[in-house]
Amino acid sequence: MKYVHLKTTALLLGVLFSGMSAAIAAPVAYKIDAAHSFANWSVRHVVAKASGTFNDITGNILIDADNLSNSSVDAKINVLSVNSGLAKRDAHIKEKDYLNAEKFSEMSFVSTKIEAKSATEGVMTGKFTMHGVTKEITLPFKVLGFGNDPWGGERSGFEAKTSLKASDYGFGWGVKPNSPVGDDIEITLLIEAVKPAADKTKK
Image (cartoon, rainbow, N blue to C red):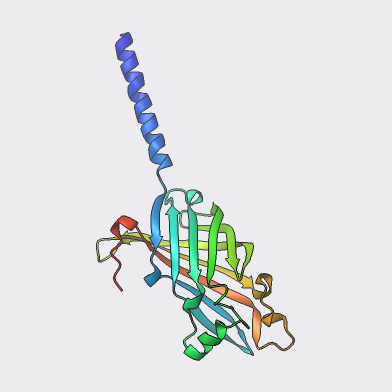
């Protein structure tokens, strides 16, 4: 009888620790697909708005679909990838008057906290670095979905929005009197990520 009791206890402990291991291993790693991810921006231009994107985003996402609070993000944006739809304007944006891309060629974001609002929405807090300045920002986000792609990979999709003040990062163009370019920048992130083991991205 004692042997049966010990065996049952061992079995229950095995199931318990197995469940704990599964819970600990719940977050799944995805690699940001630079070919299908965009950091879109818009800013006041005179009396209208100009918009564009940065289309070279790299990094990693750990996502726990069962508990978004256990997730994390580490991403970088290549400033030289700015695309406003006009090559001459892009060249100007990269100059010292604006992004100074030759000296500050990269932006980065590292999450520090994620607060889940539902199974598919939350608010992400993290450290964002641009133009050599690091600030804490928050990004409300949505999980757009998970699924298989046409090339045998497994993907996840996300959307996040926030707004930044250029002057917070050392840019002075938007605070000058009668400036043609505004200080407030609206950001929309459209991120597609793939499991590294199944990274068979097609353009």
